[in-house]
Image 1 (cartoon, rainbow, N blue to C red):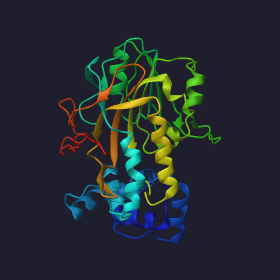
Image 2: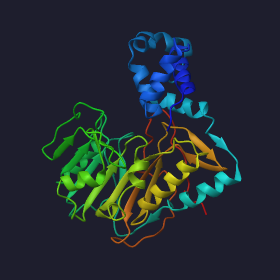
Image 3: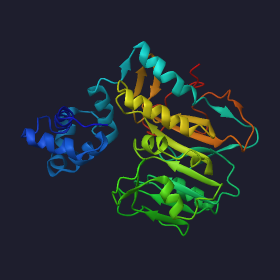
Image 4: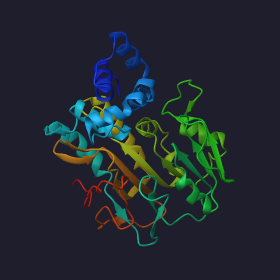
Length: 331
């Protein structure tokens, strides 16, 4: 997502209640930041923001100045929360239809990872898994730990941290981020290259967990057609935070979801309640959506009759109610 000068001014006003001192500051940050999240995090780490944090909270009462809270405000700032255009609906529905949940009677579901944010629902079908890929760590390796308890080696990738929060003999962490197309940046690489570097290019029993704050779209859209077929299960957080009125963004979503569902079907869906709800083309859609997918060749699947969230689900933020998704079908 392109960061504009107006976006920088908005972020300054949200944190400091003032405009940046000069136009040059706006230009500097708009050129430096690749995402709104990065812009917000940089501003929040500034000395002025730290010193004014308590005062700002007092001024704004219960106003949420967390990164997620500010991202919700950004969606409002960009006026992307509400759209009733017929074109938006016709563009979006074919993409969402590919995410209809399916079910299997062959395996039960299990929660992997900690309570609330960081836990994911998967099929309890992990026998014979050769390795797991965990893309995006931040401060949580609870999913990785539960996978490692099954005797599965976990290959972890996150270039935004200096170390992982907990160690395990089956963890291998790399300070590398994920990109869709190789750019030459030494701190970033494609998923295909990482799999090959680990000697897993001929494996057929890998699993994937991905939470990379919007970069998943480029990764998915540019993945070689058969790459994702190497994963028997995929748990992924999709961040719908782009400009939906941009034709190139819609194409990116379409290509990404097409690749994601070429060999897999969704078996579980959950909305992250730390992000806002969108109404796009009259279609209700969580801004951040957690999906679990299973490789279709491995199990017999039928359309699910479940209502989401289920008993296994927990709200990402325990202080806010979970979003009700119903059957999550868009026929």
